[in-house]
Image (cartoon, rainbow, N blue to C red):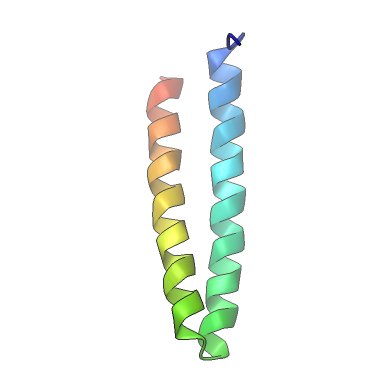
Length: 62
């Protein structure tokens, strides 16, 4: 399956990475307030990975 428009795909994936990152941030805040430390650590890890993904897609956009 060939990608038709790589810039359009990169922009879409950047939006997906931001949405996932923001959702993970919200869950991270809730987990910290509820003192669920394992969940908070996991969500922080997800935020870090989504930041890396966002930066990689941003490079592909150029």
